[in-house]
Length: 482
Image 1 (tube, rainbow, N blue to C red):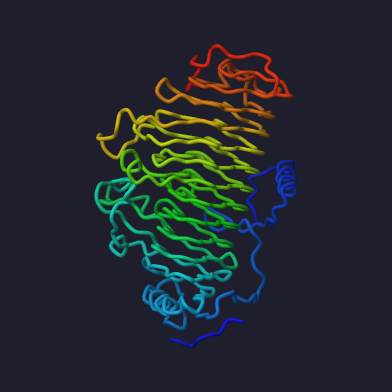
Image 2: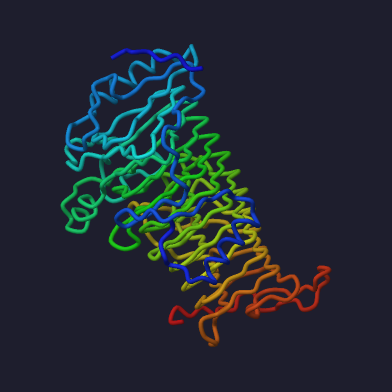
């Protein structure tokens, strides 16, 4: 038992038949979700609320309560100093196994603070960490080395509300307590061009190992929500991430960036940009930094993005992205379901990507590969740095109410190679031509799929014997008007 030291419901967006569909989907993949109505503002809780009186005891040898360090938790008092004092105390216990900081029910207003190694931040049920909205209280940090500039402005960028660098063995967990960035003021100032620096993430962990985030809610980030940067062994499990689907710019859910050995599972994400975006640096800065994102498993998710995509790779992928599996994912009411995006100047590669058992429900476009996503940090990018896109497979792709199931837009400079489709049946919104769109694509279809594939792809039977080989791999059939 830890030693205590006294040192100081799902919304009604689904009709009954769709509710049954979701329940069956969850059962099939063994995820333990307890759906309940718990509408709070623009969001809701995916997981069941913890029962009253549940213990906050964890596996650390020492535990602290934020109130021991002067925390008030009334939503008005500034509790920054309390967090700083508590984490300072835990930082002295690393060689003894570290410590757990318990945050009890209440609203804990704070400016950004830094975590320490061998630490657990535990948020009780009805505990909410609130980010101070005055940007003058948010520290400025150097640009990420693989980006060259802040993502929105040159020069320094704002740090994250909860931050960590060069750490190991860090856990953020709880009984579905929440971390709330109170991003509304940031979004308004961004739209009005009143900010001189790139907005900060909600949680950012950099150059660290063995990071776990579980059983909490992250909401209303000023910018990207959880941004692990150049980290190894990152797990995100049973996490709800929320932001308004419109009017909350760049509030990506989870952005693994130059990270290795990552698991994201059993999460619900509904935000104002990509639910997940795998990154690895931007143009020449990412090429020089040279840290790929690799060995990433994404599974058992329900995600929504009305502005961007459910699961994206890129567009900042100049260090390379490989060995990614996306499986058992439902994307609902979204602009795009899954997307790979890149451009001339990125360099790098996207290879060995597996999509398996995906369900699209009401998406404008299902599968997107885009090679002309022309956002650059400056005009000094290498015009001959062509990314490599190869060895990408789609198996068990199903859905309904999708306008364009597939749009793979390769180019002469950036062809898409060795793409495989198998077991695909996606119901379309209306019957028109140009709903399986391709350009500069080489690959194959195994067995029968719906809708019928583009002529760029080879056709094989279920035993993987060739039926018809394509002679039109460079044909362009892209129609953005559909």
